[in-house]
Length: 138
Image 1 (tube, rainbow, N blue to C red):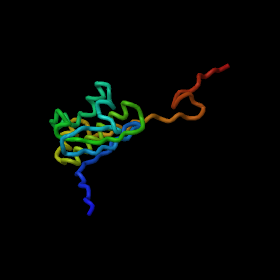
Image 2 (image 1 turned 90 degrees about the horizontal axis):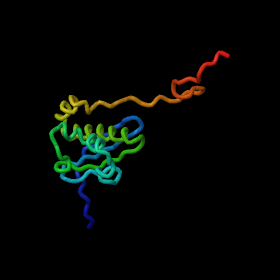
Image 3 (image 1 turned 135 degrees about the vertical axis):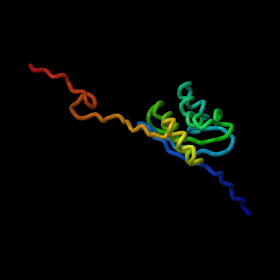
Image 4 (image 1 turned 135 degrees about the horizontal axis):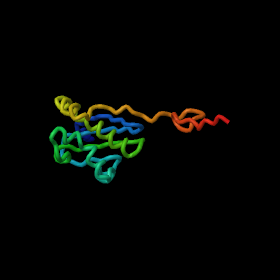
């Protein structure tokens, strides 16, 4: 007789910023956070980035997220800043899935808004997206 594996209940959220996409699975149990298979402190090594992705936890009053939550995060595309902000939005959305009453707190902290700014594409015959070659009359 085979024993079925017990599935842990999870709460998920997706965050996007520029070209980065982050998928977040949040578990309501004490543990570690892994980002692309690495511990979070090893993935985001800069101090600003390490503080940025935990802002949703701090907004709801959890100063040490590992003491109450654990999670798995997959992030791809974009650069470091885009990935950090995508993870932050994904974590905020996962927390709302965990408890709907947290939405108001996260909204007032401006953590539930997706920043829709993207890089404009380069057009033909232009140097950049809008920069034109210098005009010469003669």
